[in-house]
Image (cartoon, rainbow, N blue to C red; front, side, top):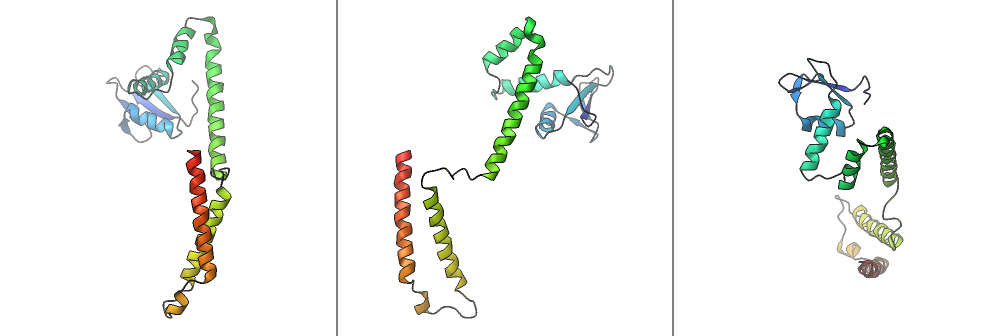
Length: 187
């Protein structure tokens, strides 16, 4: 596993304690997993021998998560991984896994970008009616607020809703009940 020069360097002492060279404090496997989840690359080096222990600790983090019931790797995948160590195809497997995970990350990023740019309810039947109702409600609500002036409170005559407001409210009620019926049919 190649590490970039910007990788967070963790040193393992003879006592097996892990030392974060960036913050000058000791860290746990959970801390290291948190660094990785936040997008940091890590490199774990044995202080005495200089050996790179990153792979060993990453496997240990995965094993701990799997043993806690946080199953990400299906049994079939784990079985195939074990088999690959004894077969001739083991040389192609790391490259295949790397490419597969990279494609997964890219598609996940693209999905999240699309979700941020598009309203997920937009394709739902009745969305246009719901949006129109919301606009009418906000217009009526904001119209009522804008007519209120603290220095000149409205009189009782001005407070009475007009026939047009009553009609809009009735139309909204009808549309809401129609939408509720459609939603009930969907579920």
